[in-house]
Length: 404
Image 1 (tube, helix red, strand yellow):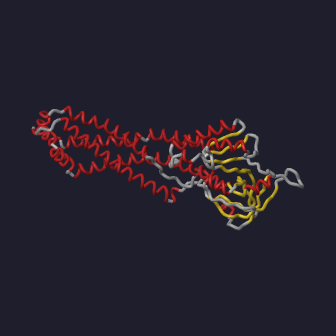
Image 2 (tube, rainbow, N blue to C red):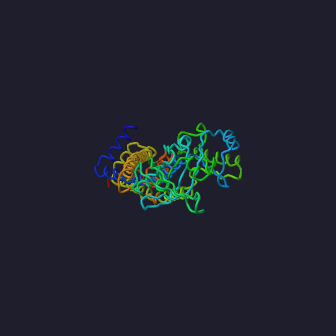
Image 3 (cartoon, rainbow, N blue to C red):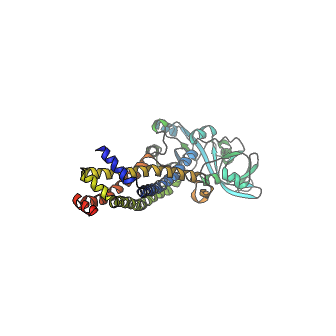
């Protein structure tokens, strides 16, 4: 019986017009699936790239006091020990103006301890006394290079005229890339002790960045489990520190944007299902085309003993083959689009609008499984109509029609 099914496949697809039709159906369905995958992948890529960049520049969790500057005292350190938190870094973050050859720009100055901050954030910044490290866009916009001297105006008071900002010279040591345009354009790093001295803070800070214990986290920081674990530690830390402190996860700055992208991804994914449905009509048309064009051969096979059930399984096998080939082709399309988006200059994004310089397509196995499964369900439902039409025709009626 297997040989009979193989023979039937050959009869149906050996004709040139049938083969071209089948190739067109596979191409159209594969392209439609790729459109959905690329849309989901670009939105997931945006969110995950944004989160990775934020995590790299801030650590997993940050907290600060509602009262302003504070000391990381023994009580706070004991709470860290209870929660198993080992990697943390104290920071001083303040707004300032940077001046250079008649140019000025508002910047966000971070005073960091290089040893602890690089461990928490994973960045390589080593500012010493009177040295400043700038974001890449900030360095480019000012036309600076390492070794140049800039002046930073901070509201640290003035000994002679109270209330006026104080001006402090810094030597540009280097640059750092955050991966987020706004941070690269506005953020600068100086030595923690130096900025504490300038602002007269002694050992006080206004921000602490920390990492969740690594043994509690998965290797994949894009996973929902990682997000849930960070949120869990955020709540636990807030409970232990009390209402006097505000504790936030690393993505809090862009939480509204991330939520909006997730909602849009769902809505667009549902709308693009129409594209798949239209392509599936081509599959239905292909089934009906073969049934009409090869009706004599089909009825002959049924007359020679092929049961209707076997015939249905043959049709479903052909439809499944179209689905498998279309899914495989869609993966090829996705890889092509990913390369184009990542390399073609046409797809460079204005960072001041889209936050990131480039998009990337990031898809999980679950994304592929979901899209492929939904496509097969649509395909099966639509193909059932064609099979039902074929089933209604009796062998005797078909033979009379073909040999009359």
